[in-house]
Image 1 (cartoon, each protein chain N blue to C red):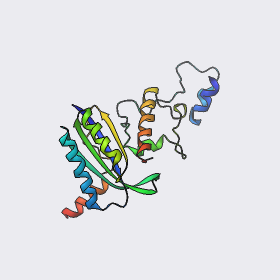
Image 2 (image 1 turned 135 degrees about the vertical axis):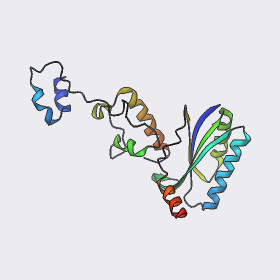
Image 3 (image 1 turned 120 degrees about the vertical axis):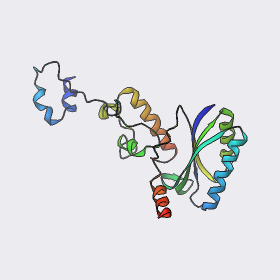
Image 4 (image 1 turned 90 degrees about the vertical axis):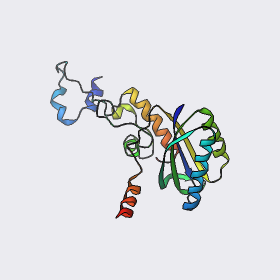
Length: 88
Length: 116
């Protein structure tokens, strides 16, 4: 787990990376698509969907983008819909 | 009654008149099978991200339909045979959001120009 945490954290968090870190510091990012002011996931919203797609058109894994499980399911569905219409 | 969002992609070489006819044809079809069209959006000519039947671009028309399953099945049955169309997609939704328009920027500009 420690290795993973190190990868995820940015450089500004470097000080918190000591072995004796207190429990309250978590290195998980929050999901960018859940919460009150999150954008709506929709197959028409291409701008948003393109953020979560690689250059080759593959869907990015949630462990990279830190999207929650529920939202990742919605995302993948709407990306596939957009693909069918040749929007992505 | 259910709410559906329906999008069709027509071929690139169709003239505006033909596109209007296509739109009218399907609005009539929906109405004959006791459906109701709440809104139609014309997204215009967009670039396809990959070739479909040697077409690089497509004319997108988007319907918001209130109807039951039979209307949709009849619609899709007719669209399957239609040679003017490249793709179609129906999505069942719980609510329409009529405010946000993701492809409407160009149209709004045109309307502004016309009013000016």
